[in-house]
Amino acid sequence: MPLSHPPIVESQATGLTWRSLWPDEEATQAFATRLAERLQRWPGGRDASIELRGDLGAGKTTLVRHLLRAAGVQGRIKSPTYAVVEPHQAGSGEAAWPIWHFDFYRFSDPREWADAGFRDIFASPGLKLMEWPDKVAGQLPPADWVIALNALDEDQRQVHITAQTPRGQQWLQAWQADAAPSEASRAN
Image 1 (cartoon, rainbow, N blue to C red):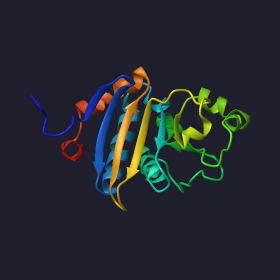
Image 2 (cartoon, one colour; image 1 turned 45 degrees about the vertical axis):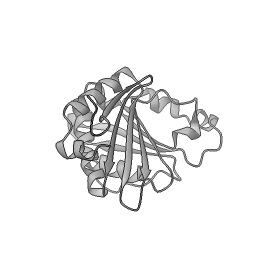
Image 3 (cartoon, rainbow, N blue to C red; image 1 turned 180 degrees about the horizontal axis):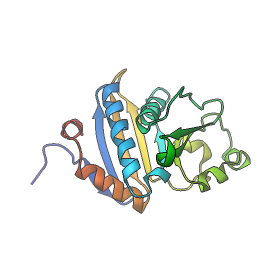
Image 4 (cartoon, one colour; image 1 turned 45 degrees about the horizontal axis):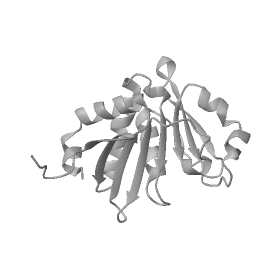
């Protein structure tokens, strides 16, 4: 029986893919809020590794800012474009968890990743969010999720999430199973 639209989650050789269309920044914020809640609930979610891919202006940093706020990060949230990494602490007390926001845009050689000492950060607990991961190809461990953003115009974003690890695949299946009705209507 043919579907009237492509499925939200597809099975692929590389894993699962979830697709959606965000009509505005409010949809980006809603996604980030939902993701922050799930990461705190899913087994291993606080130690997830998420790559963010997309051209300049696609909304990667905007998504991360909304995610950090939704996770409970207080204070100013700076882009790590020049610093390469910005450490954050989400929550407080026993509920606190580290989040690392990387931006590898300025790297010209993947070996800069190892030279910068990031191996220790990736071996430690905490959520790792990485913009421009292609600049450090071959250095990063496999990401649980790859979130690819494509700006269709000033407001709309086409989104593809691919799971690259067994844990990421479980999360993506759970994500699809409890998809919000408004997300399902935006899926393409």
